Image 1 (cartoon, rainbow, N blue to C red):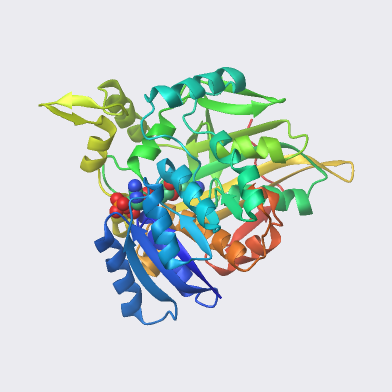
Image 2: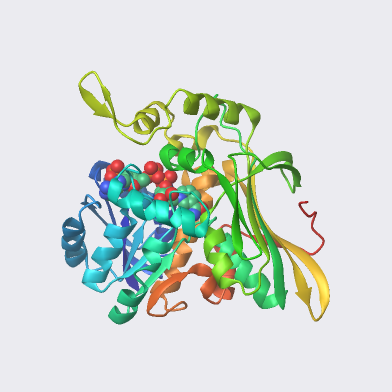
Length: 421
Ligand code: NDP
């Protein structure tokens, strides 16, 4: 049917690309590109050696910080869709290149700058903090600003098709379509019950992960943001197939788009589970300055502490063989249907070892990479179409929900869920 160009070949991309190759009726051709072409070549060899996919796979070298390099690559590959699975830092350059070439764009995380001390970015950021009331480094304004340009060019941008954001937002559209006339509250619960046996490691890119969890928390209530100190709000929850876990309220990107796209929603919160040991390690690293994102001089050379830390920590892509246990990620909704109050939970349970057996990856990469393939498939097949910039909850959730069941992330609806106080 069509050709996808995937930018990035990290933990998430490795799953998405292998899933595209399984789905060879849709993805005739897959081009994998990043700065380290040898990693792309290794994945190509791995898929070809299995001999199960009819997709033609090619690789290329690109620095996605350069719009010119991206344009040259897109012009030579001629993809139908570009799937951005590099880092959030590259979102705008890749969106610019897609716009210049008239090609659809899909990603899994919203834009944030690599250098948060850049004065030009900082001035806009500080104005936004005051106006909107949350201080996370990422927000959708940068990518939503492409709306008119994408509309005019007649191309589609799909923002945030991982698990959260991504599946959690599609769950919300599905709940609204089939279970509610009005959704009042949404609690997104992200539980990783997996154990990799290391004293400290992150399950996806350490820099992005540690920035996210060491930041202030926030939630949406009655039309505005309420900000909290990092890890200030803690709850316990008994997760199906995982058990009792501590979870903490975080700011998360889909809160921003769901607040805009779910009419009349009164409260949206996001909770993620963390063990005490993880939190103690993170606090210690933060206290000694290892989470700093600005360059410091070390023996006559500039280094960015969080990037140096990333070099010391285990590569998330290497956790697969050692991680045991399950993830349970889903959303609890309360609201009304036909004048009656109701609550439901929609969730997926994913087993780290099953993911490893299938694709050689742990469940965090799996639960992000599968929806990245599905979102791309929605655009490639025309099941989701429209000119402009969209978040996933703006489309019909049904074909995406069906695809989750088919491609490895089956979901359950619990009509009598435990609520979070
Ligand atoms: P990794 O760090 O494992 O991989 C990042 C990849 O991007 C690498 O292959 C790297 O390759 C490539 N890359 C980085 N910079 C550039 C550049 N300048 N030019 C070209 N390629 C580049 O990250 P993950 O796979 O863990 O995460 C990928 C994305 O998924 C991130 O944006 C992350 O935030 C998002 N994510 C989303 C989730 C969700 O549920 N929505 C959950 C987890 C992650 P190289 O260095 O060779 O260039």
